[in-house]
Image 1 (cartoon, helix red, strand yellow):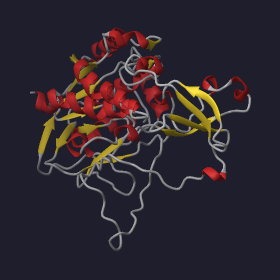
Image 2 (cartoon, helix red, strand yellow):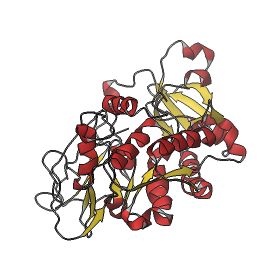
Image 3 (cartoon, helix red, strand yellow):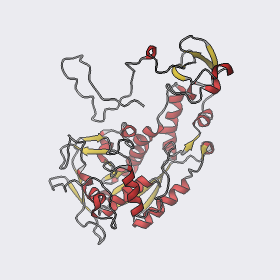
Image 4 (cartoon, helix red, strand yellow):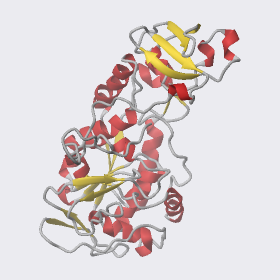
Amino acid sequence: GAGEEVAVLLSGGVDSSVALRLLHDAGVRTRAFYLRIWLEDEDSHVARGECPWEEDWGYCSAVCEQAGVPLERVSLQTEYSRLVVDYMIAEARAGRTPNPDMMCNSRIKFGAFMDSVGHQFSCVASGHYARSALQGEEGYQHSDGGSDSRLWPAMTVAAGGGGGGSRARGVAPSPPARRGGKVLAATSSSSRAPDAEFRQSPQPQALLYCSEDEHKDQTYFLSQLSQSQLRQAVFPLGGMPKPHVRQLADRLRLPNRARKDSQGICFLGQLDYDQFLRGHLEESQGEVREFETGQLIGTHRGLWHHTVGQRRGVGPILHPRQVSRGPWYVVRKDTAANQLIVSREYQSTDKARNNFYADSINWIAGAPPAARGTAGTPLELRVKVR
């Protein structure tokens, strides 16, 4: 039944397709799902270039037909509009820069999909560059980043153990011993490892680790996942560098092996972000002032057009004589006064920053780590600022 299968989120891109093949060629029973989120209302016209869902679906179909994996389409347009698009608009209206990709993962891929479909399966796999581990599992290695024992069959294939002769360097942890919990038997085939298994354990703590490829690491975009979501998620590409994923796609002769990586917003493609927001937010003109002097040097059309630290888009809103004095950078957005504060010296010492405020922190473990030492002692954390 579905409980013995792994649901694989397929986008039509190379990464998710390779993730699917790693699992399938390892003998894991897989079923692919394409999430149809592409907006079909008045917002759809603001996407630049080619990102129609029909093209993505065509690649998904070709990849699954080649592998002999069933493919289903799940429509989540309503959920995406309510949980991601509305969030984007609300954050922009409040003067903050939204991160729709982060919310898409927690609210759609591992949220709405997992709630409606994914919970029926043993795991939900995706092509993200990340690593997860179940604490206490066989193969779990805290010191070197965590090794998900549920993925050992797929990683053995990645290391050269199967997949029609394909070879790509990856991680090949030892097979986990059978010890309690539910063991999922894989389908057997002459072209797949007959003893490959997935193991589902009763509520171990799930941990999220950076991928082997630091440049492609996507843990930041998965940081809003909850314990229950991460516990059911697996990331077959977490131990593989991106170039080797491409090599594996070539050797498997995947139908989409030459397709470029997507650079657009999750499910919306190459979105004209400003035009999209203009369709939902009224323009609100305000002053642009220089940080050092307080001098009025331009007029902005809405604070939601700009992000602190960014220089793109500043020149066109300045008085002509000020443009040549640049480049200019946004250093602050004063939402109360509707003022945009800019400077030509973003990195100067008078703008030194040694603190920032953060809210809505998601502790994947369910609670923040205990502070060391006495009460009130600052907690030292490694932070990635985007």
